Structure formats: structure tokens, C-alpha cells
Image 1 (cartoon, rainbow, N blue to C red):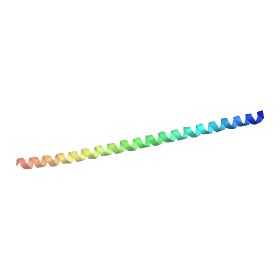
Image 2: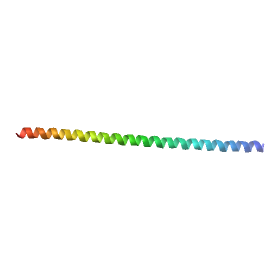
Image 3: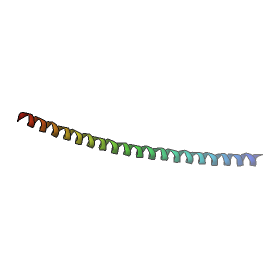
Image 4: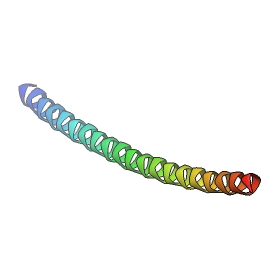
Length: 72
């Protein structure tokens, strides 16, 4: 009976260790996915900002040309 209890305790300990390793692996994957998503979003934000600045410059040039033509 004691040997069986000892064996079950060893199995339980091994199972807990396996579960903890699995949890750690899943946490690392979650962190990695979050970092990847954060990098992608920062890239998209920079890209959008650049596009908006280019559009703003283009509109400003058009407005300036229009104003110059109206002043003539």
C-alpha cells in the first residue's frame, strides 16, 4: 500500500511538472504573439502617419497654387 502511494505521489509530481512546463510554454507563446502584434501595429501606425503627412503636403501645395493663381 505504501509503495503504491509513493508511486502515485511520484506520478502526481511528474504530472504537475509537465503541466507547469506546458503553462510556461503557453505563456511564452502568448508573449511572443503580443510582441509580434505590437510591432505590426506600430508599423501600421507609422505607415498611416506617413501617408497622412504626404496627403497633407499635397493638399497644402494644391491650396498654395490655387492661392497664387487667385492673386494673379
